[in-house]
Structure formats: C-alpha cells, structure tokens
Length: 430
Image (cartoon, rainbow, N blue to C red; front, side, top):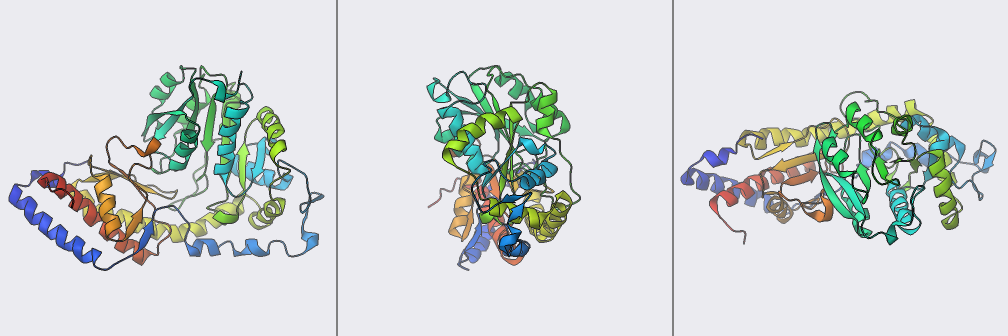
C-alpha cells in the first residue's frame, strides 16, 4: 500500500481537503439514495439467462432419466445424470458425488453437524464429547463459513491469505495440534479476495498429515467456473490429489449451480471419497429419502455438460465485467492516488476485497449507510466479525445496474476519504 497522501499534508491542507470532501459527501447524501451492495446476488439479467430451466421438463414423459422416474421416492444420493454432470465439472468421479438441494451451505452445515453428533468416518467419538474443537479459518474469508463453526462452539484460528492461498507454513504448524479438526477453503476466486490457490498450495494441502485422524478439509469450490474476465482457468481435482497423497478421506468438496442458474432453485453437490459417501449417506438416510430429483433432471437437461456450462458462464461474464470495471475504475481513480487502501483485482468470483489503512473500515461503512449505500458489515470476513485491523471491506458489484453502481462507488470513495481525514484531524463522529 502506498503512503497515505493525506499524511503528508499540514493541518491547513488537511482542513481544506476535509471541507471539500465533506461538501461532496453531503451533496451525495442529500440525494436520498437506496443502493444495495451487501451480498453477491446475481442481477436480473443473469437470472433471465436460465429461463430455459423453467421449461426443461414439460410433460410427464420427460421425467424419466436412465430408467428412473424422478417424481417418485428413492435415490438418496441423486440421479446418475446429475452426478455425471458435477463429476465432469469438478474433475472427480460420479460415485464420489452426493447431489443436494439449492444450497451447498446446507450440505456443509450438515457435515459439521454430523461430526458433532456422530463423528466423521475416522472419528473415535462424536466431536460434541471433546473438550475443544479448533478450526482453521483463512482470512479474509466467507462469513457464512465462520458462522457455521461458531454456532457449534469451535475455536476459530485465523490463517492469513497470501497471493497463492492460505499461509501454508502456518497451516502445517497448526495441524500438529490434535484439537484442530478442520479447515475452510475457497480455492478458486476466494471469497472475498478473488485469489486462486496455486498448484503448490493445493498439493501441500492434499499432502497434509494432521494430528487429528478425522481432520476435515472443507473445499468450497463455489466459483469454480465463474470467470468474468478472460478464459476459463482449470483447477485440480482435490479429491484425486488427496487420494494420491494417501488422504482419500480427508477432503469434502462442495459446489452448486447457485450463480450458474437460479440461486433460489439450484442444485448442489458434496463430493468425497466412496468410503465417506457410504458412511455419511447411512446417516443422511435417517433424515431424508432424497433431495428434489425433478430439479436435478431439469438442470441436467438445461445445462447438458461442462462445455455448455462454460458457455453459459461467458454470458454471465458479459453482465459482470462492466460492473467490476466500474468498481475497480473508481478505486483506481479516487483512492489509489491517495494511498488510502489496497485491493485485489480479481478476474472471477463475485467480490472486490478492499483493505483500507487500519482503523477506517467501520467508519467508512457507517458513512456509506448514512448516505444510502448498504454493504456487508465491516469485519464480516473474519471469525466472529472481528477484524483486528478494522480495515477489510467486501464490495459486491453484481446486483446493482452499472449506473447505480457508479453512484454507490462515488459515495464509497467519498466516505473512505472522509473517514481518513476525520482520523487525521481527530474529528469524532457525531
């Protein structure tokens, strides 16, 4: 991060700058805007790309796949055609796939829940009987991941992200502790940084030898086909890597069609070793008979194969690209010359992660809210919402039209400048 240009000013210069930025901010606030950049929701144009999903099945005769009547009971783990589709996308094997409902987060929660109530395949006892369960959390990371492990009382340990993924030297040191039972990972276009784990990082993760025999590497591949700038970037089959390293049962991979088709009506997958599937499906068979197989078949008929999925994602990119360009352009023009923050420049995923000078994030977002822009709360990308530097801000550009997004970024940049000047001048918020 460059030196803060405001710090080089004398007090008169700072007060002149403050008066100018305050005037700009007040004028923006008087517009009484109401703009939402709080979550990575696809825009309406993106949802319309999957209109064909609504008519993929039009007749009872369409509801048969591989001889299976999908409207009826049975097939707990999903229909074979849906397993084949996800296996092709992820690079794993069809028999390693369990097909879920619209939310992969539900499958992740269920995995952690079963670890506590019953234990995982190699657990000596359910985790609820343990004195302490620790979980590794790459930061900044996905707030909903952290809420899952927090809800079960896990002690969450921050692991800093690097340009190649989590700090692996630290990870390899921490897993020597048998109380460390798991780790969250978003390996491609990480939430919120947009970082792709390097090949070296993926291999080191696959080769880990945790002290806990039932360690769970949770591999949330949520953005595996979600490029918006440039061609598709291939990724490794983490299950295959773990198998080759003698850790076949360590990893649980998750993905969904949430930002491919319809977030409210998609399908998801948990990919894991056959032994893990056998164990977990025995537990799942108590709570359900199957997920929505009609929707699974709708997705198979609409998406067809990986090639067609990638073509659809390029159409999504046409709508996302100008939105991210708007956000990054505003940051480069308004913030970069002042050195108030640094940020990633992702080529895929759904977020831009901004790291301000320490102590500015909460005040910046409070000013944004006051001026009519809703954003993800400061600290959300850290366990328990505690950002030790009060600096990380997650921007979600996907939902607002570009014109509204430009207004929102104008408010964001003015708010960050104002927060920085208030701090330097010792001005306390009213």
